[in-house]
Structures are given as structure tokens and as C-alpha cells.
Image (cartoon, rainbow, N blue to C red; front, side, top):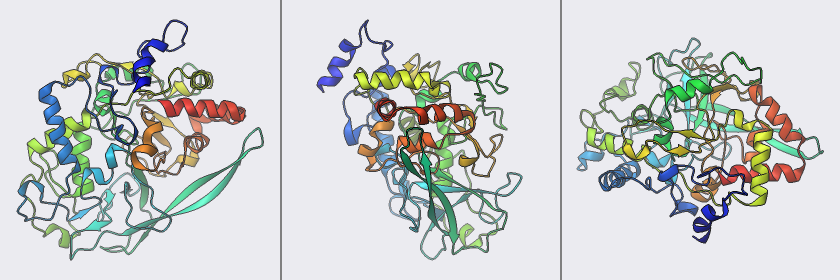
Length: 442
């Protein structure tokens, strides 16, 4: 705790740090719990009323849902097809999902999006593969991963091995998969600071967007304007406009639970075994449970930085800017008006622009989503990234968890990020270590 006390004193006039840079979530920042508990604290400035609702939402986030009918009426209605029995089943301790060993099934913390050419969901299996099911029902398939090992040699001669995944679908439960089925994995992200990201004004995202690269810097991030007319912010391709929409979609797709926003089970007409199962009420997730889960998801505090004034971290900070990593991973924003007052008017440091960027063919999943192309991905926020292994026992990065560390994640960057990646490859080993240590401190 001594470090948490001294950081503001160390960050004085001679330091390049901006005021409050060591507090990624502004006044909301978690300054009390680090280590394995880093992602469990509510925003530090929550009112007593909202803090009580936060911990109530935490209990629903962690509870396991069961098959209906059950004596626990507030927890029944699971499935019939699902990926997890609880939110925390994919977001363990509010961290990222897990990448299973090669050949293991079902997947935990990774789900597979499905569609046909043209963006339509599969008429049998829908838009998401569910690899678990209630008793007496077949899961939709048994997915598993195999890995190709790729060798990369940097300018200094050092060699690095990257993993390139292939996803396989065995034992289809409801008929064969079409040959043109498009499959895209999604690693469950960590949960910190979601409400703060939602509170960034749309005008700020529009200010950062440069879809035609009018300034000629090679970066052409763009706002994902959804068919509803709303701006996408959440999901690896910014498919959802709000935390509320994201939570409702997760209840429906990941656990097979209905809400007021998604009143129908995620079963298609060609799955009669699924549609005939008794539900857990209408909706299965009551509005009270839903709203508290939303508030919980909005109000998880980003953790304080631990070594912001360390000389090596400061060197990495400068390299991060010199290589133009900050062109997409924009360091800071100020939040605007928001329903949860504690998140308003905060100077935050998430290191994202929430825009879509073309990351090149190596990271393309071959599957467009709404207005997002196959090689386009939302810039993920970096706050809390260095604590992931302590929280979950494993740290994997990028949309499918292929990167085993930050070094590998950077080496996969291409497209608009080719320049920064090439600059990283040309650094000395000491410089690369400094940059990575900076990112791990965010």
C-alpha cells in the first residue's frame, strides 16, 4: 500500500506524467485491492445506494443458473443451449476468458460467432454456437482448437514463435454445418471500466475518427454506426452500443436466458428439441436482476497503476508515443453526462479510441459483422492488462486469445498498425522490454 500513497507525491513537476495519469479511472479508480482481487472493487466514488446495488449485482453475476423448474425461482431457466452457467464462468474474477488446451472441448471463456455470407445467421444454429446443453439435449457441436506455430525474426536477430489457431466443429447436434459457414472466435474480455467507456461522449469518438485518413498518417479509425443508428462501443467489433445491450445479449446467447430486451430463447425453428423445453418465467431474468447486473458491469473500477514513475516504465511510455501506438490506443478521455452520476466528468486513461481499425489479413476472421469488415477490430482498452495473469492465472490477448503475452500481441499487428509493429521490431531488446513493462503497468 506504500506505493499507492507515494505515487501522487512522486508525480510532480519533473515527471512527464500528466496530473492523475496514475489513476486510470479518475475518482472511480480502485486504490484498495490489487493482485488477484484487482478487478473486484466498485467505483470508489459510488453512492452508498449504488454500492449496495453493485454488490447485489455481483451476486447475480457470479450465481450459477439452473434448469427450470426449480425451487430457486430467481435462478432457473438456464439454456436449453448455452456456453456457461454464469457470467463469471467466462469472466472469472471479472478477468478475461481462458484458452483451452489444444483439442479440449467445450471451450471456456471463448465463444464462436456464426454467420453465412451476407451476414445472415445460420438457419439451424443461429448466430452463436452453444457447446453445452441441458440433460437429454445435444449441444450444438464440440468445438476445439489446433495451433500452427509461426516463426518471426526481429531486426536484432531474436526469434519469436506465434500461434495461429484453427477452429474445428465436431459432432454437430442438429444436422451438418453448411460448407460456407463463417466462424469467428471471441475471447471474453476483462470487465473493468465499462461504464466509463460508455460515458465517453459520441462527439469525442467522432473527433478521433479519420475514416479516409485525411491526415495521411496511415491510421483510419472509424466509428461503427449500427443499423439502429447508435454508435457501437462494446464487443470485439463494437457490435453493441451500451453495457445494457451487451449484458442482455450475453444472457441470451451465452446462457440461454430471456430478458425484457431479449424475450425469446436463442433457439431456432429447426431445433424443436430446444424450443419444447420449459422456461423459467417471462422473462427468466427479472428486470431487477438485470438492472443490478448492468450496474455491476458498469461500475467495476479500473485498478491504480503500480509503477507509473519507474524510470523504465517512463522510457516505455515515451517509446509507446514515439512509435505512434497512441494513435489508436489513445491515452485519455473525459467522460460526459451519464445515468450513473459517479462516472460523469472523469478524466480517464483507458488507452483506446473505441474505433474500428483494419488490422490486416493475419487477424482477419473472414466474417464481416454489420458495418465492420473481417479485418476490422475495435481498439481494446489497455487498463488493467498487466494484472490479468494474477487475476485469472492466465493472460491471453487479441480477439481469439492467440497471443500468450503482450510481445506476441504486438507482433500480430498489421494493416493500419503495421508501422508501429515494424518500429517495435526494430527496437533493441531493452527498449522492447521497457515498452512492454509500460503497457503492463496501465
